[in-house]
Length: 413
Ligand SMILES: Cc1cc2nc3c(=O)[nH]c(=O)nc-3n(C[C@H](O)[C@H](O)[C@H](O)COP(=O)(O)OP(=O)(O)OC[C@H]3O[C@@H](n4cnc5c(N)ncnc54)[C@H](O)[C@@H]3O)c2cc1C
Image (cartoon, rainbow, N blue to C red; front, top):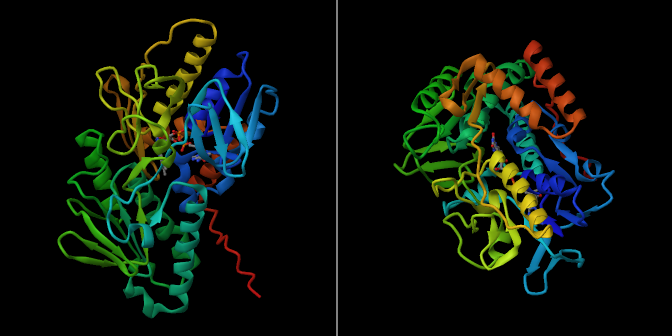
């Protein structure tokens, strides 16, 4: 069988099938599994890129029925039961699990693709970190450029990623960069969080939303609610009411859609391009093909659309694997039942909101401790967990976001 994507869904599908009598080709365009909930920490110099990534081959080194393939899937031939890779390799399958995740959507807002920084991949996080650190270097050399928005970071989207980025950037600027640039007035730097609706953290309870708003404002983040973006330009953003914010750094955290591979699959698509699947997560009319994780529009117990979250992907991947095993054993498949483990978002040092099953809500340092523990548990790889734990402890004790390196090739002739 073939599994496309070694993210949360594909990795868990493959792990759950390792002991079954199947040969699995696991394909990914990258040679690592990325832990995206901590991506914003790479962008804000809290962690290094390989702290949150784990080589896929290392995970399956002792699994002789798993063949890891590095390549981008460019075609899926359902009739021939073949997957085509960009370098020309063709993989045959009896069963296929499509777990290619999601990609950035600009919602059709002019200028987002050209001028804003997306935050979906490790190279994008490193590029953003380079850009923020370089902006401070440039401002230190030319203070006259600061009023032009050189030190203004605009975060578009008040969901968990926007909130987490806002808290982390304000801490990076207020602590480390203030010390690194003693001759620069870092209080002139601005962090502006722009959200189209009148609430941060949609999907959380009003109390958690209020807590996020108060905490960010206390950190000096300017939060603009009910402020949809009209366009992004080379020199900043224009809001729907016509007001402008000069900024050299606009971070787009607002929109995702299904990975373009979804378009290669037949059948109905949901609003964000995700593949509508049957109750057992297979493709309608193709019981041998499963779509799981961010690429799929799976439904919860009451038919509600499930969100694009790591837990949905992990459980969906495991479920698809169990259905393949059931089919191999000649048994019927079962519908997917999602178990809600809650939602959480960190707002900065010692501050997070966590809403757990059973109505349990944690805030402040309790929420933060829960957030730290959950992220450490789900991070793949013992070394990664250890390195992240040491980094966090170091940061907690010293306030030092240690990964403040600009990783660009400056060795021009
Ligand atoms: C910045 C950020 C923060 C997030 N924070 C949270 C959070 O706090 N909590 C939470 O629950 N969720 C969070 N999410 C969402 C969560 O990461 C996703 O829901 C989850 O990763 C979905 O799992 P997946 O396996 O479907 O996709 P992914 O984990 O994205 O994996 C998809 C894999 O497919 C590969 N791939 C894509 N296209 C191709 C192709 N054509 N050929 C080969 N390989 C391909 C990719 O390289 C990737 O490895 C966050 C996401 C982001 C981007």
